[in-house]
Length: 635
Image (cartoon, rainbow, N blue to C red):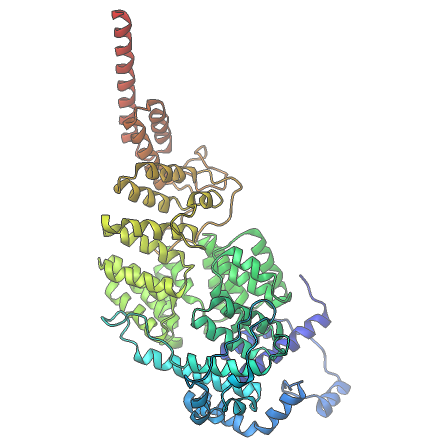
C-alpha cells in the first residue's frame, strides 16, 4: 500500500478534522490517536520563498477549523456557542453533572425517564430497519431535546455517562473486598438510552429507515447498548457510526470489544467501509484475538510505510512478535518504541510481561522506575511496578500494586490476570479464581485468564476438575467458548494446541477416571511435536508465567518435529508419551509400549524410567512367548 501526494494530503486533512471534532466532543483518547497518527506522516519539505511567505501572511490560516457542513446543524451550533463553551469548560474541569445540566437540566430529563412513558427503543436490524412507533409515545419534554445540536447533545449525554461511571466506581467496594461482587451498575444508562431513543425516533422516516446523522450519537448509542449487554444492536449502531465518521477510533475500539472470534471479525469486515482506518481496525482486532500470521505482518508493514513513526503501529508490531512467541524481537521493538517516546506509558504493561518472562530484572527495574517518574498513578505504571515486585518474589507487594491499578481502572485486564497469578503464588486459590473470573468478565478472549482459571481449579482437586477442564479448553481455543456438546476435538484438529494445556486436561480426565478421554488428550499432546495438518497459525500467546515456549529445547537436530510447524519434543509431550506407554502396558499392548519407550530413550527425557519400561516389556513378551511354547509341547 502506498499513497501519492494528493492522497497523503487528503489523509492529513481527515486526521486534522478528526483531532478537532473529537476534541470538541471531549473524546480525548480518540483525539490523541488521530494526532499521533497525523504527526507520523512524513511532512514534505517545501522551501518558503518570498512569494510563498507573502501568501502565508495574507491568506493562510495557522489553525485547523472543522466547520459543520449541515446548514441546520451549523445554525444550531452558532446559536448555542456560548452555552457550548461553558459546557465544554465544565467537562474539562470534570464537573460532569454541571456540564450535562447546561443543555439537559433535570426538569427536561424528568419527563424523559418517566416510567409511564412507552419505551421506543429503535430495533436496528439490517440497514436501518425497525418497528414503527406511534408519535404519541414521545414525552413532551422530548421537544426540548430535539432543539439541541448534535454536538451539544453528544457532549451532554457523554458527560452524563461519565458521571454515572464515576459514581459507580465510588459506590463499589474496595477491590477484592468482602462486598466487591462486581455488580455495580452505571445508573445513568437508562436516562441516556431514553434520550437517544427520542432523538433517533424523531429521525425515522415513514419506511422505517433512519436518516443519517454525523456519527457521534450513533457511536454513543452503540456504546450504551454494549454496556447493557445488547451486543447485536450495539454492533449495528457502531457500524453505522463508522460509515458516517470513520476517524473516531473510540468507535472502532468499541467494536473490537464485541468481537470474540476470528469468524465474527471476518463477518463484520464485510459491513464496514473500506478505508485505511478499517485496515488498522482489522490488524488491531486480529492482535486482540492473538493472531500472528504472515498476512498480518505484511499488512502492518504496509501501514508502517505510510506512518513510519507511528507509536500505535509500532506497538502493534511489538505485540505481533509477542503473540508469535518471538520474545527477543518483541523486546527489541518495545525498547525502540520507548527510546522514541520515553514519556508514553500506553501498552508498557505488555512490555513488562515480556521482560518478566525473559527474567530481565535490570530492564524491568529501569522500566518500573521510568513509569513511576512519568506518572505513578497510571494503571500501566502500577502493573509494571507490580510485575517488578513479582519478579523479586515479593508477592504481597505485587498484589498491592495490581489492586492500585484496578482502583484506578477496574477494566484493567492485565491487573486482574496478574493479580490472579500472585494469589496462586500466595496459595490463596479462592482469591485467584475470583481474579481470573473478573478478568474474563472484562475480556472473554483472554487466554491467560482462562489458563490460570483452569490451573487453579486443578489445585482444588476433584470437586472442581470439571470446571478446570472447561476453563483449560477455553484457554486452548482462546477465541471462542467451550460449550457442553460442542466438538472440541474437531476444533483442535484445525489449530495448534499448547502441549502443557493438553497434558493438564488429560491429567484431569485421568484423575476423574475417564480414561478414554485422558488417552485422547495425551495423544493430542504428543501430536503437537509435529503440528496439525496444514500448520495453522492460531497458536495462543504464552501466559505471563510461562517460559517463551514453542521451541524444542531438549531436542537434538534429529529429534521429531525438527524443521516442522510443531513444537518439537518438550517435557509435556514426553510425559504424555510415558503415560501412553504405561497405558499400553496395562492393556497388554506390548508392541505400542515398546515403541513409545524407545522413543522416550531417543528424546533424552525420563531416560532411566523408559529403559526400565523396555526391560519390563521384554520380560512380559518373553514370558508370554514361553507360555505359548509350553502349551504347544503339551498338546
